[in-house]
Image 1: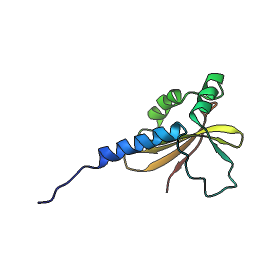
Image 2 (image 1 turned 180 degrees about the vertical axis):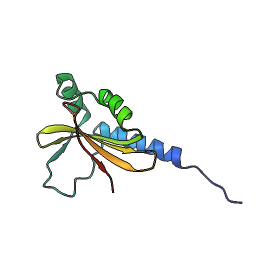
Image 3 (image 1 turned 60 degrees about the vertical axis):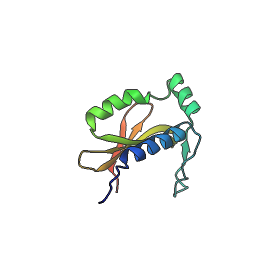
Image 4 (image 1 turned 90 degrees about the horizontal axis):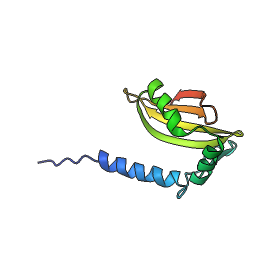
Length: 118
């Protein structure tokens, strides 16, 4: 007799906890391999100040549009400062299991780039 255990709910909970800690700035991601790319990871209090000042569009507002135009499951969201502007980076898994990366200007909501992840 072989016992089977569904690890997916456990992994989802672990991933949610990790993303929460990351979003709160309690843990930091590993630095990018290419240090020439100037990316600043933003902490939760910095993000709140940017939203209040109107420098970035609230993520909730952008997600409504993203879900309509790019169906799938969002597996990662980051807000970075790249080249003197704020950029939301989203990873989405579509219905065929393909992972897409979307880069949106956080100030305007403009789609800057959409690429298939390798």
